[in-house]
Length: 326
Image (cartoon, rainbow, N blue to C red):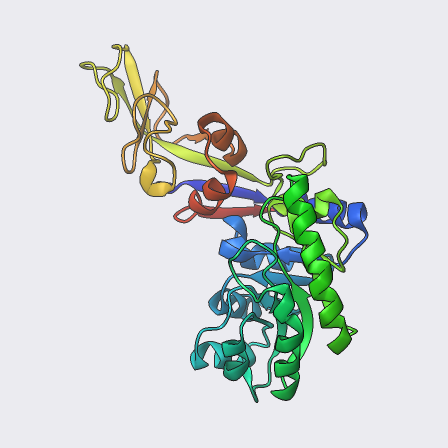
């Protein structure tokens, strides 16, 4: 097999989800955006049915794919809908939209679609400021939009000052929101917020589901769910002084793995000797062609080279063959 192989243990993802729910005793919104952080959104979501209370994705296309795969739980689309086509598809697939502007009210007016209001508590990505939540609720009411929730996102939950500022802003927004929608679900705690103990109606967890924790958090027993393998594609006696795209000390023999920066790894963060080629990695010593070599885990690779584990996860399986356990 010439493709990178990603083996995903769905049992570990289920156990991570149970661990997080037990820790916070709150409903779980499982974040499966960007192909479930590279783990395969449909497979992960189906594995979490009965554990996760709902799901969150980045785009309408991602939500539609989950519905086609058979996921029946509520699915929140975190990116605001941008045009009529987005609205039509979201309504058709029974997706929950994010409403974070007064322009969005015009877009959703009269449409048979649910929405969560997005409030900007300081990240400045999506949503209205807390002072505008009451006005946005009033406009949504007049437009007949079905609002079922309010949410925001923490940009630095490990920092006490930032966390305090944002949670205070969200509390203000929540007070305005519940005056209009007393039964709406309010959520701000992604993985970091959930681990920081932020008060919220539900936890909206992504990274920890897959066995990793954001910077500043530790000692939560979640387990990485993915292992990566690449095939040995060549093994020969050495000649000259190069290895991949770099001059090196001469060796007696080299073997090559069929993995490179075209598979989502960094060119200058080697998996072997020298810089990675686009589709090959040179390693020292002999190996039998056709056998599989285990690659560093995404977490180990990220730590070794100072790369964000988020980036590693979403990149290294884009061309991989996926195999699921459990």
